[in-house]
Image (tube, rainbow, N blue to C red; front, top):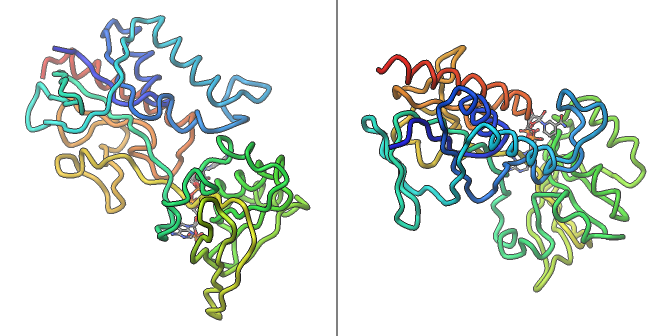
Length: 306
Ligand code: NAP
C-alpha cells in the first residue's frame, strides 16, 4: 500500500514529488507516455524563474527529476488504464495488469495537443504533419511550412520554425490573433512568416509525405492549394482527464475542478495539480506552484487520518 501516488512527471507532478519526498511521505511517481511532460517538447524556456539565461525544456525537467529522486521519490513507468476512486484506499491499474493501491493520489497528468480532425492529418502524422516544432522542425530545412492557429503556441512554433524553414505560413480562422502582443510582434517582424487570415486547413495532400495544404477561406468559401512540405498544428491543448471524467468533477471542457484556493478534488485524498486543472495560466511555473500545493494538501490529508 502506497501513502501517496503521483500520476504524471511534468513540472506539477515532479514538484509534488520534491515536496512530499522532503516531507518523508515516500511518494511513488508514475511516468506515462511522455515523461517530463510538455516541457520536454519545448526548446528554450525563457520564463522559468531562477534562470537568467534560457534553459532547454528537457534539461529543466531532468533537473526536476533528479531533485525529486534526491528526496526519495520512486518512479514507475507504465500506462494507467483504469482507476477505482469509489472509496479509499484508491486503486490504479496499469495496462500490463500491475496495480497500485494508495491512500492519497495527486493527479498531474497535464494536457495534450489538439488536432484539427481532418482525415489526412492522422495518416500523414510523422510524414510532415506535427504538433511539435521543437521535435520536428529540424527535419524541415529550407522547406515551406504551414502553422495552424492564432495563439501563443502558434506564434512560438512559427517563429521557431523560421530557424530552419524557407517560409512559414500561419493559417488562422479569424482576422485577429489570440496570442499575446509580444509574441504577435515578434512573428509580424519575422520576414519569413506570412499570415493567411479567416482561413482553415481543409485538407492535407500527399501520398507518402506532405506535398500541399488545401486552404479554405471561411468568408468566401474559396479553396486554394499551397505547396508545403510540413503542416504544424498549434491550436491548443486538451486536459488528460479521460480516466477521471466519470468519477471526478470536471468542467465543460474536461478540466478537473478543484476547491478554490486548494488542489482538492471532490474525492477525499485525491488532489489535482498543473494543466490538468488549469485552462487559464498553463505555465510551467504555475504547474510547479500547484504541485507544491498538492503535496502540502496531501500531507495534511494523510496526517489528519481522514
Ligand atoms: P490557445 O490560446 O487556446 O489558442 C489556440 C488557437 O488555435 C486560437 O487562435 C484558436 O482560434 C485556434 N484554434 C482552436 N481550435 C481550432 C481549430 N479546430 N481549428 C483552427 N484553429 C483553432 O492555445 P495556445 O496557443 O496553445 O496557448 C495556451 C496557453 O498557453 C495560453 O494561455 C498561452 O498564453 C500559453 N502559452 C504561453 C507561451 C509563452 O508564454 N511562451 C507559449 C505557448 C503557450 P481562435 O483564436 O479563433 O479561438
